[in-house]
Image 1 (tube, rainbow, N blue to C red):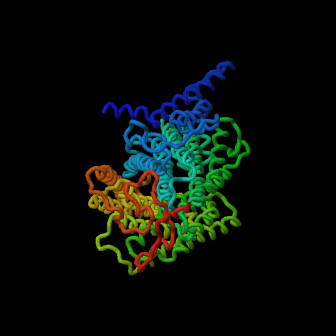
Image 2: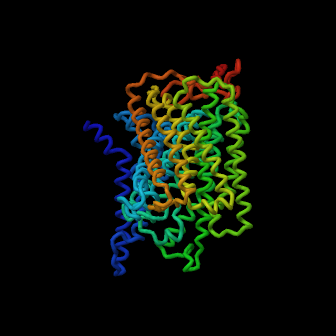
Image 3: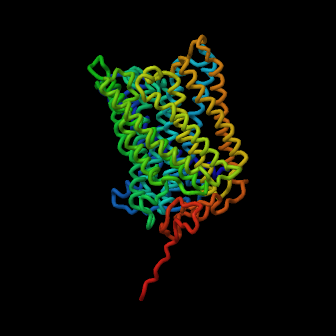
Length: 624
């Protein structure tokens, strides 16, 4: 026990957190010292000092954790060979608390962190949902409510980005036959830099919070409490994780595919990950610009958005939504890829319209850059701009519809199991929930209906349906499906199905209930409502549904933890998949493929006699 405690206390995670708070204190002290030299007092939590300390704290975390060690050694000319396996004299589990360059370890780090952050964001939602269960203020103040729902939004988005990182990092190299990501050190950096950014966001809650929602709109952000500065800096730092990870993924996919794996022989999940990475790489900079300008306006006294000084708050909205609407597709494209990946396996027939489905991911990514201003129909936009953005918003339904038709056609006359396993149940749940999000989206993309519904709870219900159907349900399907590959053991099927049958109907109640109260006049982002609206019973049902969803996720976590010790060993290919990762032992060996393979067929030719996707590359003996 003492040895395990010592391993944890000396891990990169703990060292990084210590380094972060030490660096923050040094940064704050430096600004205080400069002010002292000028004869100026430094009030408690002086905003410029807090901001400077926050920036230094990220560097302190990365240095303390050892994320930058290899690069610093390379700068001075020292060799830094990649280390494989657990640190000498330490157990295998210690790898997940330290900087490790294996893509599978990093993928698991992403997944565990994503689930932990998901629990924090979900807890915040339950807290303010309890407040909304009855009209009147029950136990939260308005400021506390505003901080909780604002933090819930950005924390859940961070959780989703981490979950996308988990799927991309663990699965893409395995699916394309690579031994690792193209840049292992950059891969580790992209994970570890997300940790101090999350810490900054949580610290922002402790120093006054913020009441702007996760969007951080100017001019609200210019008058919000101190916590908004840490929120924006945390958001900004997290952008480095997105950009680094997307570059790594695209280079890996472009240069490290197995022999014979042309673009149209890649697994469909890789297409979704590639499309999402293109968005991340190109759009993240714009929200970084918006956040930089907002922090500079507060901390340095510059003026960009405050109309009183000649600024334009609409500029912030354009910069913010140019990133923040495409980022929705960063969330859902890998999730939709999971649906398309799993359906042929369980239907035992080819994926219908494979090439169209692959190109539809790129189509969604492209059109996603042309729709941002539908979030601003109520901002006083000129009609000459409203109309084009309304039509481009409708256009995104075409590539999305391609995926729906493919799923239906793949299921049609497929040999689906009579007793569907948990991953397939979550795929079906994802399709049903994403359909709710899909059919309620055009209502917000058309100008007349959006003007009526834009600031209502209809938005909340639609957005949750889109996120749960496009990401949460597919993410859980992926966790159950690849759990045997990661651990070498099966999960407990009964608990998996209990998770699903609690979560799916509860989500239907929650999302449809949110849209219902929105139609009846419930505004979003408010802590109270008029009892005369007659929506109290619906709010009680929404709150109960949220609690059930939370309990179902806890059941999943218990299932996964308990199954690592008690569940039976998994077969090498329990799902009878054609995908390359299921043709090697579970858990996956350190270097993935002992013998390289080449692709000689199509990835989804299930049910076709004699169809082969891969074969081992037989080395040709050299002649003497």
